[in-house]
Image (cartoon, rainbow, N blue to C red; front, side):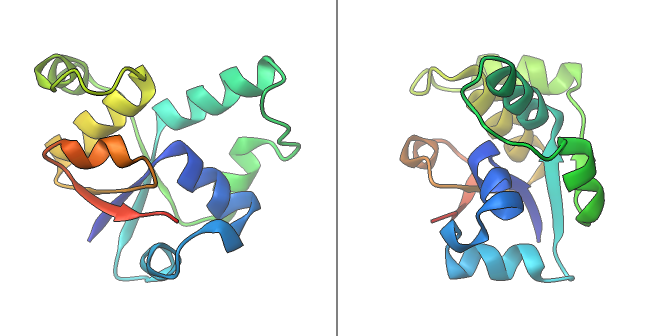
Length: 126
């Protein structure tokens, strides 16, 4: 299975693993699964950190290097796919993650209930 971590699922995995559901933790730890982190999540984290809204002291690049996560870049096809999504969710970061998961056939690990209204597989993060 290919997993795509929502930003909060990524943060919980890195700094608060007890917040993850048992199913999400098991899926992320399962070596048979590929776990991806979108560049969009890194961007969101850095924006929030710069605004003082996210007190994460460990550099993201260091934390990701310790994991076996793969990086998912943002491409034009993902950007264009965002436009075709229903307008239920206003968060541009989440909309991009939904588009990426949909196009790549990934399961989005998230606790965001709004995401369940989109045509994308999800795994509850909490």
